[in-house]
Length: 438
Ligand code: ARG
Image (cartoon, rainbow, N blue to C red; front, side, top):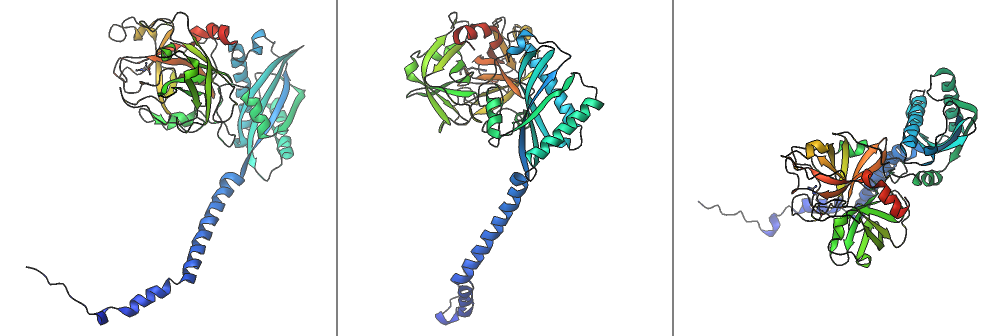
């Protein structure tokens, strides 16, 4: 059956209704309505910024003091020595004990040792202290509070280090000064608002597999590109001018003038771009066995460190990571074997695997040499892949990041019992120093 549509004549249309609607949206009402909406949004943004930005502000102080119950050691002069790292961490732990457990302790963010220098009866310590206080507070008032908390702790707390009270000085510094002081320090990540980026932000977002990185999260990550052919490999920034990467990246082309290096979380657009001046391959790199898969690239002009460009720390050659240590690999490589390069930087949490396990007949059957390091999972799934080569495998020690591996090789990607194989950076510490002075 068909239904005939009801037909209206001109006069039957509900003209009055139509006119009312038209009247309601007259230009003045429309303008007022828009204005009201804009005002509401404006107020909402205002309230949010008031709480997020206005209410709390970072305050930075340079603390200098003498510790009298320890002796200065030669290696304290080298920031990547085990002695410097261990002593600094002890001091930083002590600072968080002093400030975290005090009244208003939630105001303390963190501290960083900048320098340890010799003193006739002890060690002089220079460090940065960071606090967050309401923006209405003054740097001088906070300074007084901080001093009070510290002096109180000297009297009441059992501290492992004896701080000489008269030697203690606290100087308020601005964020630029703080950044310059920390920029001289490798392996530190900062958000754009100058707040240290904690390691937990990387782990919490990873459910399984690889996640895209946030800006400033892996500021030492470099994309090495062949002019006209695009991204080939990853690399890590280890100074203002030097990159560390894999030797096999230069198999196709060793001519520095054909290469560029970019920084930032995307390949296009890059945050910073540089041309390459010089390429140094390890003299004993063997293509067939992947032995000594390490190379250096020098930039033609230096890069300035910022929250998106930063060097990673090189670990002391004596540092050894036990099996099952949590480490991160990052890169623009494909997410499946033979897949395309990714424009956004990705990261994956993997675990170190002992060489004994990795050399088992059912794993890599003796192919792992002392200059290599296995990382991944025996069940597979999470791994680096094609295009990640040369890129960093990093380890976080109390929010300072160390380059422990260089993406080198693997059988396919993410297969069970075929973890990623990395160049073991600690083995090449002296080689890097001999070529770069770093
Ligand atoms: N050689 C590869 C490259 O050129 C990287 C291999 C890493 N493979 C792995 N399964 N982890 O990008």
